[in-house]
Length: 584
Image (cartoon, rainbow, N blue to C red):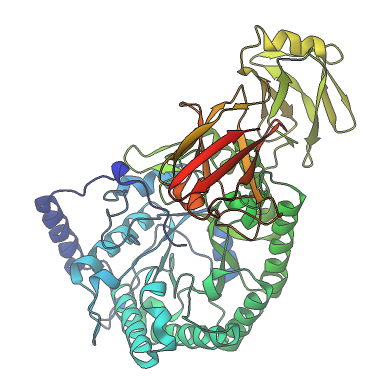
């Protein structure tokens, strides 16, 4: 995917120039010293691998599950530390392997380290650094997928207008990579091109250009000899999309090459409205779940069922987690998605690689930023976990306490009960279960909300026969209160008393019913792009991007939706660069 960058103040400067020179010298000495074993005839044999790689491509790709991406690193532009992840160390791969990953995808952007004219030479120092990371990963008993990454949109997409030069550069790039790594063990896999794009091309033209590139990639690598003669190669679809027509064309390409050491690759970021929270995609609902089920079924039927292994080279959510901005995706809904992906991967025999630009593993401390989230991802590799219709129960402060219900999603498990810490709640007195309905009694909720301060008063756990417990927050709330405000198109915030609520989405329309805002195909604007909650300061920020797209002098009705089910209407009017907001 194209990168998700950290804000500038979270980036870290690279190491000093002296340290970089010493590193380069060490790597180059390692390369010239040779890592291959000499054969009696003087040719080189592939280096021994710390990983025992099955001969079957299907078995080898299965052994790569689960996988992880070293994102925003060697793919960063122009340099490894440009996007905030510093210099990768061997300890990074040791950490990944220790936490259960069996393979790592190392995206690499070559363009800033390669001449743009023939013979398109890749800088030797950069190639040595790439090789150092590849070898570190394999030393940690990890399979490695190595690719050509953001070059896809930097120069490869220009093949539609500069065909011969782009193809020559692509072939030269892969010839140099293949030569450098020809003696690496089969635990190293080559991926021809990441998310290929073709400027101005129709789908039919995309298929034609991509087939040409991938066929050429296959020929160049196989002709380079050594271990490349039977190395696993990964081929993909336009943009890495799992669109059925795109996968069908990839199947045609793979079968046409008549090579048993090929694997298919696509990427998966969930149902788009849910992945970025737009168009009302606030929950991992039946539509989002069906999207995953249908996509994985198609993946399996197109490739796996026909003997071609499939690698989801990137999966995740496009805007979650991002620890530097308010969360677009509600936490419990995100957990349901990750749990579902892990189950579908096992069900359909697909290997999945978590895309990690900086969001999951802190590259400085080598600790997971959110241990509970990682626990859910890791648990999904081997078992199912039960969930519920939501991870919060809202108890309005302005009303008498009454019983509240959630729907249990057993996911093949059986319900064991509810705990608060080490204390098990009493069935019948504190809660009841009827079918898949879990109901907390008014008596229990009265005890749990205590003095009824707004916000989370208690956290419970619904536990199941396998997998992880489902956390349920008991929340005291009331309908939020919004106030009048003035500002400009550059700076406007709605004073907001949240009163125990979390913002879910914003619906924006004019009096004639047309949509207001930059996302004009839906009234539900994109979270953090058109609006964003500022809980510490008690406001809802309306972004310049949203405000500048409003019609001048025409009031827009904004309906703010909260996860409690509360809605509040607010009106904003832009007049030139001035903005006035009025609470209803």
